[in-house]
Length: 216
Image (cartoon, rainbow, N blue to C red; front, side, top):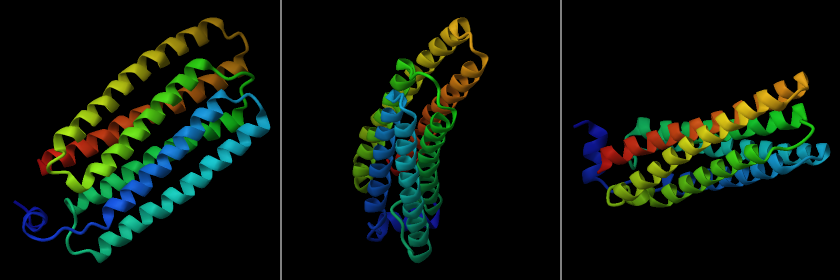
């Protein structure tokens, strides 16, 4: 058993990380809701506005991640292993960055018409973000709530499977029916970016699950 684990058992844990994870996931939920909005939007100017608001969320997220890292340097005892505290913060940040990347592609490419299926994927990304927020509220009781957190991770995994099916259906229809080559490339790149975001959510849930298993 390493020193971090021993200290976690016998020393009062440093709790200042938990509010930061909650702030981080609240900010991600906000960005994910804006992603849903932009995937339903056909007006070019409004797309730019929504993409800018997601960029603002990304900036806020970077600051929260930096604070978590700063706290790591200033803390002797952490709620779980130091590497996991850092990895989880970075994974949440990567998820937010991917939301930003998807919105940026919509804002830059400006497809002629929004897609119901792309919006449907965005709705699942929002569900993932809300699941991460629920997890964050339970991090302080990670040891006793490990099974609950594991079930929430299962939901993220299930969402990713659903998104895969939606993505495959969308791409099949796109290549069958889209006659404009430029529009096809635009929509393909947007779909790939937003599907990648779902994959990243699953990766984040794997990190959370790994921590929960160690703490159980």
